[in-house]
Image (cartoon, rainbow, N blue to C red; front, side):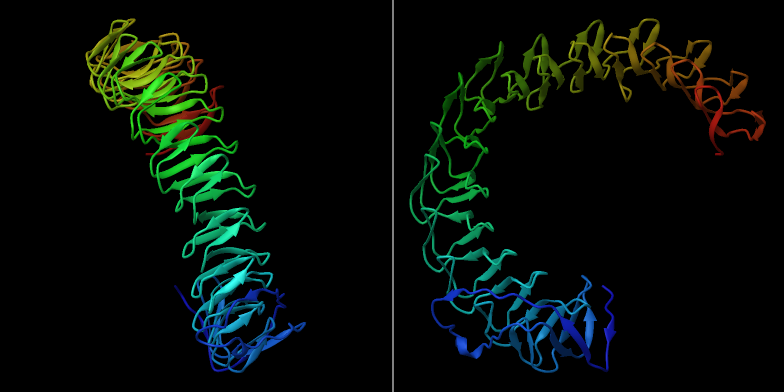
Length: 487
C-alpha cells in the first residue's frame, strides 16, 4: 500500500453535521462515569485542526487532533485519532476516554465508526446499555443500522422480542424494523407450530418468517424428526432441508437416519438417501442410494450405492446419473463396456443422451463404423451424434474422402447436421474454390460447403490482395475475405 504524507502544518477542515438520538443506559461505566464524557448540541458547522496526515487504502485521511474539538456534538481531546474524507466528513474515531455519542457510552481505546448520514455505525460499549428493551453487555461491539436501531450485539441478560426470549451472553441480530434476524432461544419456544429447544439459534426474514434453525436437540418438524444441526425453511413455512434423526418413510419411500432430505415448495420430496433396497419408479436401487426428484416426482439425479441397471444399461456405483423430466436418462458413467445400436462404449466413461434416447456423446471402447466412416476408439474427444443419429464428431481411424477432399486419420472430424463437413484436418495439399490449402492444416466450412477459414499453401493473390504461404484466411459465407493472420 502506498501512503502519502502531508507534514509540517495543520489543516483547517469543515466537517459534516451529525444527528443525535436518545438511548437509555442502565448503570455507569466501570472505567469512567458518564459525566466524564461530554456531549453538546451539534452546531451547523464544525471546525477541527489536525496535524500530520496520511491516506489509508480506502482514500480516507488518518490524522490526530492537535486541539480539543467538538465534532457532531461530541467533544474529543487533543491526540484523538480521526478517520475522515477530504471534505471533512468523519467516519471513524479512536476514543481517548469513555465517551457518550448519540446517548450511548462507548469505551476508551476503542474505535467508533459512523455512517455517511452521521449516525453511529458501531462501537464497543463501556457499560451495560438498555436499547430497544434489550440490555446489551459491557464490552460488546455494538452494531447499528443506518436509522440508528441496533443491528447486532451481545445480550447482558435474557431479553424478549415478539414473545420469544433470547439467551444472555449470546449474540442477537435485528433488522431495521427492530424484528429479530437471528438469536439463541433462552427457553423452549413454539414458533410456526414447531417446538424448538432452549439453545436453538433461529433465523428469520424481515417479515418474521423462519428461514433456518440451528437445532440444539432432535426436533420434530412436519412429522419428521431431525438431528441436532441446521434445518432450512421455505418462505411458505414448510421445511426445505435437514438431516433425519431416525429412519422414516416419506411419500412411499423409506430413508435412513442421517439422510440429508429435501423438499420442494409444495412439500414434495426433492432428495434423500434410501435406507433399504427399494424399487422406485420401476427401478430397483440398493440401500444407501441418494435420489433427487423433479417437481413431477420423476428422478432428477441418482447416486447409486452399487452398480445399477436402468433400462438395460448398467451404471457405475457412486457416480451420479442424470435424468430428463420426461424420465429418460440424461447421462451416467458406465459400469461395463456397453453396446448401443452396434457401437461399443467404454466402461468408466460418461455416456450422454438426448431426450429421445439417442446417444449424444460417448467414448468408444472399440473402433466403430457409422455409415461408411470408421472412427477410432480410445481417442479424445470420443464420438458424438445429432438427435437423428447422424455423426456430429469423431476421430478418423483412417484417411477418408468427403466431397472430394481427403482428411487425415487420427484427427477429429466434425459435421454439420446436414451431413457436410464442419471441420477437419487436410491429408494432402488441396484446391478448394481455386485456392490451395496446406496439408496438415485444419479447415472449417459453412453449412453450404464453402470454406470459412483455412491456411493457404502458396503465395497467393486473393480478391486483389497478396497473401504469403502459411497465412490463415477467413471468409464470409459469400466468399469474401473476412480476416487473415500470418503464422
